[in-house]
Length: 373
Image (cartoon, rainbow, N blue to C red; front, side, top):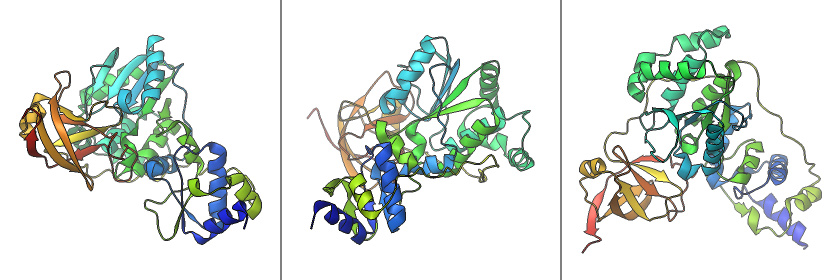
């Protein structure tokens, strides 16, 4: 049997095809066409959250940052997790754009921050609902959308997210005179439990206001994954790894008679189905934030975190992120602020895009030793 026939048979006998986030746009389209023609499920561990966001976002439009005169950076510690987007924002700022940063953790490394808006971990759905009401004020809207916004409990959302109405008014004052405002959406939200509704609200903001959006991606080539119609959360049944096949996708498609074709966009100018924002998750207790680009293998926090977690500088601690047990040396960093510690992901086979790994985690932490002993 030829290598192409072997690859075709492997795919036909499988229930799920797994693939890497590094897939390019052409192969992503071919793979989606092949899977659709054979009724096969597709699974990419690193891109499930991103794909869920893009599917719900619907418009699939992501704008350039460079020529903006106001940048609102939301939902990432960009220097660590979404560096390419940060570099674009930094260039825009150097060209005169006003820079506004929204995140639960203040980052003193960021330059020229005109306004920092701190919100509670997990409250991103509430935050985007607040932005929806803010940026769509006095806009001509479909009746259904007007009714949705009128029913939002702004006082409740403001209190639960810890964003004051005064901060929101200051934000509005900053952006209303700008010609091009770009809301840069980071990777924190891709595995949020309400990612689909967050995406729909953001798409609605872009559709009915002058706010444009730029969306982070898990890897440079992972934008190709946005061309795939849907991914499953966990692989099922018989599995074939795309990387294990000795034939190219083009050869497999030719053998099956599958043609390369663009998938239809689901975008419509109709009001997207927005869900009610009734309750925001609580992250009381010991909380960490998983960071992709920390060079050292330590749990890094503030003196305040050490008091909450009852640990000291140099302690060896154990805790779980999801089902994975981790051992870290706790290190105090005086440049950090707040009560949330930073946890590196480099040794975890875990990124911010892995299924069930929303970057903020509430943990139970145990001291098991001291690095100074």
